Image: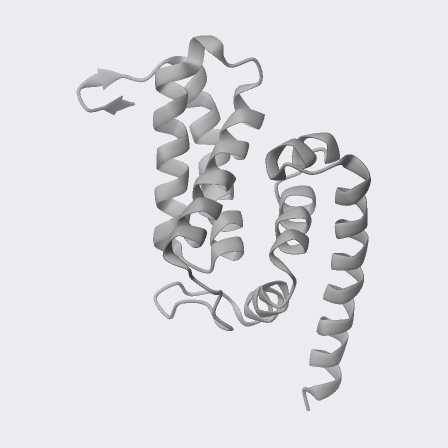
Length: 160
């Protein structure tokens, strides 16, 4: 892989190939903006190339940086999440229902659920990523899962 005329180090390239698509989807679900998700992932990998020698766990580091870039972008723009995904991103019908339900979670519950269940990140890493404690992440996961379950059940009951 080549970026700006320079060969990207093998380890960063391996993590990019393994994680970037999943990261974009998770950050899209978190931010509700494909542009923010893509920009955050690209920024995280650009920083990884620059700082690779100082990074112990490259995968965890890139996830943490990408999340923080996306969260900062949302905060800087003063954005609130929309109720529906952007129309240019097509998803199958059941995925839209889940996506909309995830969007109704609080931002902290949303990121905890996405990082744990979708990105398979450990609770300790999630706590570090969002600047929280492990018990708090466990609470956000528990409450978020229950709320997500209720939202999806309510949707199923409302569907004819």
